[in-house]
Length: 427
Image (tube, rainbow, N blue to C red; front, side):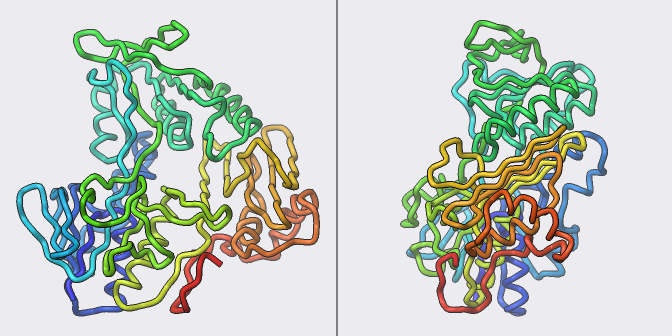
């Protein structure tokens, strides 16, 4: 059997390891456009802050490919895929044949059509190369503007502030982290960041990036204001990296469509990670769950099934946790909604603390925990079980604190995978 994996991120790495656990002999080839194998975008901002060594960026050591028996071809970009002949074409003209294929090409940053984007000093943060560019000539940078107030942008803002830079975050939506936060969570986070010297504005848009001699000098807002800066960082989100799959016969809808075995419409071709669209286990809608935990679970499921197993991917909903200057945040599911139809909502607010739980039809569908994330594991376990509860969300809010001490600390974080069971749809 010839296994081919496109991509060397968490989905590709976990898939390769899973294949090798089941199949000790077959060949595994990994093709990646990245020159840095198994490096974590999640850790880039921590390294940039100077608080961690460069080694923290890599979640597998240099001997990984030899130990796993994986032939890694770094620096090769896939340009097209022929699923009929089972061949992948690379940018240099080479072709690689396969018996079973995993598409784990991740995502690419969204770039806004703003005049001046070509100016030197406009960067996104997705790879180690991007991080190194942001830090270039950092001694000559005094102010940084971040376009986008999602959780990645906020974390980056904190870490750049730790380097004594002036940091401004502009978000065009009325609230930060629009697909995770509600308005109260956004306002509390804004308050905390401003208290640390970070300028945060919502409901505003950058109209133009200004430059002097081709280098960023500031931004012009749509309301006419001008802010000086020497760096502009785009953090407005990502989209699945699927361009090379056009015409391949694989079903696409903004991302690669897969079933709960992580298989595409083409037999023997699988996909995992940020490149996919999967079924949200709460709403039953197609979503692009571009998070690290989702990529590792999807890669594990895909690898197991590619090697002849029968696993299904379950518990698919968004979940994020981060630390902003010691200000802990954990969000999951669909607690960000502002319209509460047939929902039981419980909220508690205190000094630097906000806790919210949303229950619909007797089931927990989401929560926001800020400042105090106690009971997060218990709440996650209820979401994954999808079990009806007989008490109100207010009782649940107190129980999430009192019952936590009786539960194993990892209960709610167990990976969502069914082992070798008949095909089941996210149950």
